[in-house]
Length: 450
Image (cartoon, rainbow, N blue to C red; front, side, top):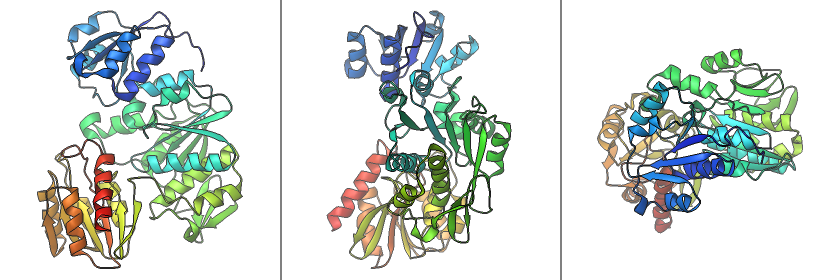
């Protein structure tokens, strides 16, 4: 870990705990900062805050007093999930106090070069695939970020001989200032998270921060098929490595004649790629472009692509159960992710969907329901989805209480050869703490049927 002096003897407020807040507070304390932690959960119910208190960190719990911003803090390190319209955050902005997120700290202390991945969809799959490719190529790769392992925890342990592969959300990137990955990956940009960012321009600008500090010594791997991504690429100072599923890009990775290519080197046919779904070709191309830059051999790339089938909760193949092909896509929390999942199959689909109602419309899914023979809805949005199903002409539509009951109904509505697909198009928070919990409950219910 780099022993930086930037925060030594500086007053810093860590706003919000969870994993990233605890890690940030611990790291800043080790770096000699005067750290105050503020979290909504009361101290007596907050073991993380209690632990920090024992370590000598000042802790204020149970509420977010606006007066905190009058105590002379020089930085605020904000939990990414806390929106910028939070009154305490707005007060900090008004006072000109810089607001950072924990991945900025990770970058500043990491001795390892960083591969950073962002995009509206495909981040987790691509991050995991890049990690697998680097490892297969004989490199020491440490995965971190929005994927579940806190980046600043990993950054404290890596050396210059490692690579950090970091999944970055727009929430995290918005709170960066000096963040400069050796390789940045921008997969795609669609309308999302407007309840947080409020405008599409702010969302896209936040995503673009992944490359804003890069120089000519660094690399941006980007989707050359999207105009919004191209605009960001046009502004970067980094070396450009495009990828495309629609055209030959001689300086990057692309699909041609049913095969994957990097520059002019044939990698393997698309039929040999184990990861299901046409949309995943973008993730694969981005990943092999990164692997080639780092120095992974073509043979190692081929071996991984022939065996890598995806990540848990993202179009995860659960198994062949009573002749049905069952897939867990609980991480599909928006229309686009579910649209991609529905378009991945030609067999009849029994579709399980529903969850938190954020006021969204599902109209853009209409054209992707061609193969859906039965729709099973649950959660706050079940009425909206049932209405969508009726407009699509789906004859079998059932409303149930939860994912577990949806599984039982799915086997009643399906036949051998059908696909049973959980792809909710909604966040899980109306019924389940996380999309992982929802996906695990789905898998458990499927195994009961076995």
